[in-house]
Every structure is written in C-alpha cells, then in structure tokens.
Image (cartoon, rainbow, N blue to C red):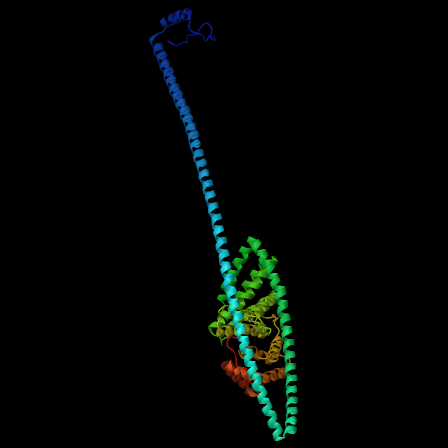
Length: 503
C-alpha cells in the first residue's frame, strides 16, 4: 500500500491542531497498513535524530559564544593588569631618572670643585716655580756680572802689559803691518762668509716657499676632503674598504715586475672607479702617497743600507703617476713634511723654541732616538732619489719626476753649511741617483765637477765646518770619504745597487 501524506484543509495554517484536525488524522490512521506505519515511524525517527543533531549543534554554538565571551572578558582583565603594571613602571622609571639627574648634578658640582682646586694648586705651584726661577736667574746674573768684572780687570791688566811690552821692544811698526795684513785677511774671510750666508739664505728661502706651497694647497684640500668624508657615511665606508686593500697590497709588494704590475693595475682600477667622486679620489691619492712613504720607512729600518724597498716603491709611484698626475703632488707633500731635507731645508732653532718643538719641526717622532731618526731620514731621501732616477719598465711610460731635480738637490745642499746628518744624506742620495745622473744628465762633466766638489770638501781639503763634522758624524764621514775616493779613482763608475731593476 502506497503512502500518501495527510494534508490539512488549509496548507498555510501554522496554528495548533483543532479537534477537526485530530478527527481527520485518526480517521486517516485507521486506514493505514503496517508497512505504511513502519515507514512513518522511520520518518519520525529520522526527524527526531535530525532534531537531536540540531539541538547538539545549538548547544555547541552556545558554548562557543560563552567561551568567546569569557576570552574577551579575560583579555580585558589582562589588559587592565598590564596598564597598571605599565603605569607603575613609568612611575619607577621617572623616579629613577630624577635620582640619576640629581646624582649627575652632584657629580658636576664635585667635578667643578676639584677642578677649581686643582687649578688653584697648579697656579700656586707655577707661581712658586716662577719665583724660584727668577731668584735663580738673579743669582746667575749676579754671578755673570761678577765674572765679567773679573775678566774685564784681567783683560785690562793684560792689555796694559802688552802695550808696555810692545813699547819697550819698539816693534810698533812691525806689529802695525802685521795687524793690517791680518785685518785684510779677516775682511776677505768675512766677505766670503757673508756671501756663503747669503747663498744659504736664498736657498732656504726658495725651499721654504716650496714647502709652504705644498702645505697651503694640498693640506687645505685634504682638510676639506676629510670633512666631507666625515659627513658622508657612504663615502667613509667606501674609503675604509679601499684603504684596507691599499695597505694590504703594499705590505705584499716584492721587487718583481709581476708584483709591481699587479699592484699598479689594482690601484689604477680602484682610482678609476672613484675618479668621478672627486673627494674620495683625492683622499685615496693622498692615502697611497702617505703609505708609500711609511712603507719605505718601515722596510728601510730593517736594513738601513739596503734600498730595494725604495726602488720597488718608486716604480709603483712612477707607473701610477703616469695615469694619475696629481699623485706626484701628494708624494712631494708627504716627503717634504716628514723629511725637510728632501727640499733640502735645514731648520734653525729659533729663540724661545724648545728642543721638543725644534725636533718636531725637523721630523723627529715622539721619544725617537737619534739613530732611528737618521735611518728614517735616509729612507725618505732614498725614496726621493729612487723616484728621480727610475726608468719605467713599461713601454711608452714617462717618469714625471725629473732627473734634473737630483742635480739641483746636490747643488743646493753643497751650498748650505753642513749639519751632522748631511754626510748620511749625501751618501744615500749619491749611491742611488749617481749612476743615472752620470748617464742621463746633459752635462756629465758638470756632474763630475760637483762630485769632485764633495770629494774636496769631505776628503781632500775639508774647510773648518766640514772638518768639525768628524766629531759628531765620524762613521758617516769615513764611509762617505771612502765612497767618494772610490768614485774618483774609478773614473766616476758607480757600484751597482741591488734592487735597482726589478726581477
């Protein structure tokens, strides 16, 4: 029997069942067979299960809503706790800042008090020392005046006795003639000395002007460049990377053509990459020049009589300068400021100038011993001489350092009153630049005459000022004399210096 669903009289009626509906339903149910009833039970069970599932889902939804509500409330509570903790932290931090500010003020007050006390103590000590110095100077002045008075009395007595002796021996005429001859000789000697002094002052004036030009132009430029690098962190980082590479490569330099060319090519690439950035370019040129001079000092200090370091560094500078002409100016700046004898220039200690200030001007480092100072000056002069005589081994490359400057250097230093360091410098300079000067200079006879001048002054017929050098520079004088004597006896053939030509 097929099942036909019961239909209400009004399908749209959603209200409760009426008595008529129940009567109709009962009448309908009596007509059903068992199969239909089973099917209806089945549908009723399915409807009940569906209702149970919907009820369970509603309970789960209600629980989820409760859980979310609890989470929201819990978050609100925790946020309120965090806000209270943050307020407490801010209060404690503010209290700590107040205490620290009070401690800082107390520290500044005590620092000011101790600084004022120290300055007062130093001022009192200085005044006491000055008073002691004044008393000492007054005592020395009294002693000096006493000695002068005694000398004057002694001289007066001697003069009186001399006049009496001359008068008694009746030799006034002979003594007069003798004095006139001596006076003429003295005047001639004084005129010669004045002429030499005038030449020396003229040479010093030119040297000082040269040094002032380098310092004024390039030191001012470097000052501006360093200020710009300080303000520009990107340029500063880039410069730091390049200078590390420059320092490393110079430490790895050997006196071989491959090593020299590799380093020149690497430096050239670095400088070419930064050439558009003028400040960085000039900074790196200066750094290369500065480190070349420093490297010459360091390497020569290990073996003062071996100049292979000067030769290989000179090749680096000459090849680099052919592509970067400004390098020569930075080289001369560092050579001249570290070693005034490159110009050449002999500084004179001025009145009121301390020994420390004078030593700083002539190139001494702090607490440097004299032997190390002389060796370092020789190293810088050796590098300068190597630059002047270098012949590039790369085709079509010219050396911008003129060999004529070697002639000028030897001529100038010959016209200046020598110092104890002079024989060291002349020996070093001649040993390196001499062969090239004899070969290349257009007047070889003039070069030979100049060498003979040194030979006469230091060996054959030394004037008084040259003879006096033996007291302070005996070893250097002996070595220079032997060197000059060998040159003259061997027809001005210079011994070959190792390392002049790279392997």
